[in-house]
Image 1: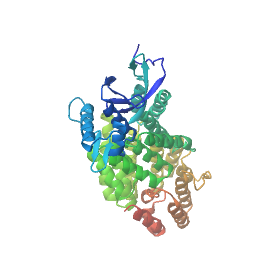
Image 2: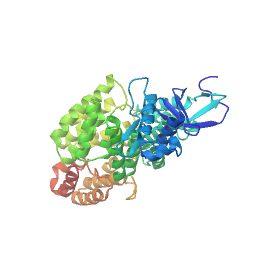
Image 3: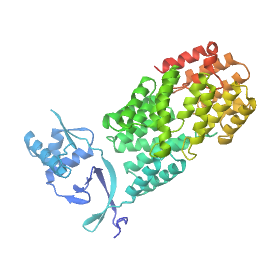
Image 4: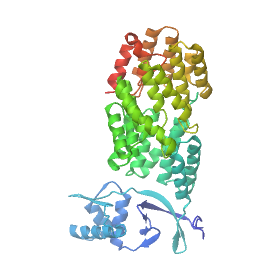
Length: 484
């Protein structure tokens, strides 16, 4: 029988941890597909611990499970657990961290446990490898942050779930794919909120199936934050790090869902664990921009731009974009127009059109070029740049406002509400109504659910708040204080 075949007999479900699979219903343990022989007492204790993975199981409960009412001493339980730890030792390397002693109370099973499917044929067993393969393929496609890759990843994870609906890695992968697909629609006139809801659903399911999985909680944090649930997302992100403190992706998501000094601290931790990640530099710079610390932001962006440029010669996972754009925005706010234009041109020349943020980045870069050219009174070039932004992203609200075109109505509860408010303010500035623009945008920032709301204002190129501080002082103060 080929390894990808599925046994004709009905499937049973097992709980996976490390290289082991435990059939709770039948009390059978396998290591890498080979049956591990254990005494009934030890199997019963293991089943009880795995069934309550991540929780403290009291000594009395384990004694009842292992000896079924017989009177035994604490030492008998301790010896059984000690032998069980040795049996779970990974190839004799002394790894006994699956079972943690909780002094005075009992024991806790600490490994990440995933529920999966096993098919038995005759007396033996054949493991269906298709879900594994699908997840591996999906993860590889996911890490490219390529729009087509995200679609392939989503299909791969959905395929894995067709074989096992409770396969946790597939749930986590599908949640990530859906969340990123939603992110890729932010520049569109209509955001894919249904796919975002699917991301939250799968992430919640994964965290319920595997409460000791840091990856499940980290993914849930990301999806919840995209939906605007800032408090719950922060709790989930911190729980992920408590479970797996050396995973840089968990720290990256914590940086993403945090703000102010918390974001800077988490992003710097990312750079300790994964040096040269452009996205981490971008996250730090956003906080410094909100504070109006332009020189400090340029220092961070210098390293970030170098990291982004390195991707061209050393492609890898999680590629970043927008570092040169952000640098151009800061330079423009400092009236360094030629240097800003160079940075923006460099951004456009290096954009990978398939990257999930590429269209948004390109449209924002053209919009920024248009604003700078208008401030230099190069009106023909400005109109061309704004039109180029709309060619890349027809729903780019700020470019529409810059050209004096009508803006679509956006409800206050819509995910694009703050973008619409910023575009509305830019339109008012275009018509010379700066004070009215500042008041309208101030109300929008105060009412926004995300604490980072308004972070772009200090460098927004059409509004140019740095040159008109009197009009924008109140809202700039709000933005700056929130970024502490």
